[in-house]
Length: 357
Image (tube, rainbow, N blue to C red):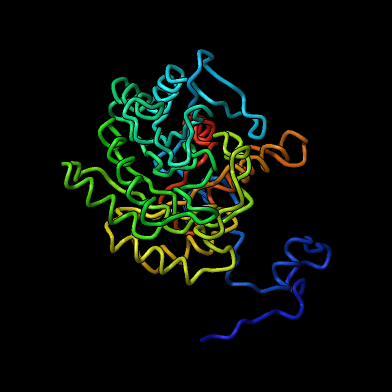
C-alpha cells in the first residue's frame, strides 16, 4: 500500500507574488486521499448514498376508539391525538389509505360499566372494536387492520388477563384471549397482535384461528414487550390508568434484559407468529437490532405514547424542531433494522413524505 505523501511546503510552487488561499493551504497540508465530506456536499449526493430510507410503507397508524356521539375527544397527555368515534375512525381510515399508509391499529376506550373481572366485553361480537373493524373494512377494504389481543381495556382491574387475588393467571387468560382473537377475526381483522405477554398465547391463538377457518389471518406478536414507564399516556387514552391495580412486572419484561427478548421471540415464532414486535421503541433499539440480526423475520417496533408525548411536549415548548425530531426518530428505527413502525406521527409523516415526493 502506497504511503501518503504530505508536501512540507504547500506554497512552494506558487508564484512569489501570489499567496496560496487558506483552503489550498489546508488541502495541501492534510494531503488526504479520502474525504468523507465529499458525499455530503449536496442534497442529491446525500440522497444517493443514504443507507436507511423512510417511506409511507413503513408506517402503521395506532388510533383510539370511543363509543360517543362526539366525533373527536382530545387526549390530554397526547397533544394532537384524539379518541375517535366509529364514524370519525372510518373517515381517518379513508385518509390513511389516501396517504398510502398500509395499516392502522385501533385501540378501544371501553365504558367503565362494561368492564369486569374477566374482561367479558372483549368476547362480545358487537363490542366497540368489532363494530369499528366492520365499518372500516366496509369503507376501506384495502387498508390493513391490526387488532390488539389483550384484556386490559376490558377488565375492571386493568390487567391483561384474569386474576386470582393479586396473581394474573396465565392459562385461564390465554383461553379468553383466543376467543377474543376469534371475535376480531370474524369482524374482519387482518392481523391479530397479542400484546398480553402470557406464555403460550401465540400458539393457542394460531390453533383457534386455523380451526375456525381463519388460517390467512396473520399474527404480529408483541414478542418483547417491556414493563415500561413510557406507556403512561396510552393508559390514559384507553382509560386504564384509573383502573390498574399494581403493575405488570410479573408478565411484561424487565427493561434490563435482552437475552430474554431473544428467547421470547424464538418461542413466538415457533408457535406460529408471522411478524414480531418490540415495545417500546427508541429506548430499545438495541433489542430491535439484535432481533432482526438474529432471526431475519419481519420485525416491527412501537414508538409508544411516552415517546410521542416527549417529542410533542418539547416541540410545543420550543425546545426542539418537532418535525425534524419526528423524522429523525423514525429513521432511527429503520437504521436499527425495523421493517415498520407503529407511530402516532404516521399521518403527519405521510403528508410530509408525500409533499417531498
